[in-house]
Length: 294
Image (cartoon, rainbow, N blue to C red; front, side, top):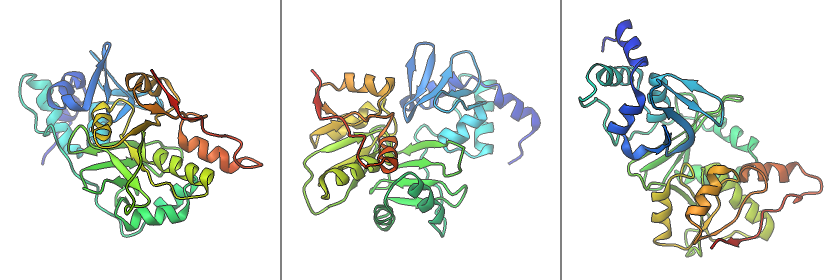
């Protein structure tokens, strides 16, 4: 496919706000004069501006960068789609609204193993995830890919030190990732976290506290704004809200105050886990007690 420099310039200046509302309405939600990406609430697209900003990392990018990073498009797909948007605002673009594809697997998992060990997750737990097909290393960029059992939801985390990358791909708006350490035991409840690493960190903290393997489901919904996933999970299991200790998490708990909640001491459960592992004596940072809102 031939991509000219004029097409690239045009794509960079495309109206990303209008593009997303028309082609991916289920992937974003309005917030004032901006859009927020449902799978990563820190990513904002302002009306009247091109590109995006990630308020969690400070990263910014143009419209092409957004489609590649957040929607899984190739460079040619991003350019041709955005050119269609900028030259003919009322036309249908070439990116399907429910585009879903998985990054190809790498032959090795060594980089992902090392990365997750640095986040405080036990090697045995990582081994279990890989053996069950719930985690793999991508061939390109060696990202950690947390894949749902039905292969209809994937959370992707970058493993390069100093560079934050986080995205999600799902077949339906209510998709989520879940881990059960004991599939043979009926779970008592589901803990709803924002990301897979946080879900696994909370599971690890529970194991440390109880000295036992808790028979619960630990879910990741790719951001506190994914209300459809929360509603889906709560339709078949009692849930405990375990989202982040920040403004987005507080808003999520308020919206779901009928459900009990646990709140990390730090910003998220992985920070709590790492803090515990570094503390002397251990277990200085205890997670807050189960609380009921409303």
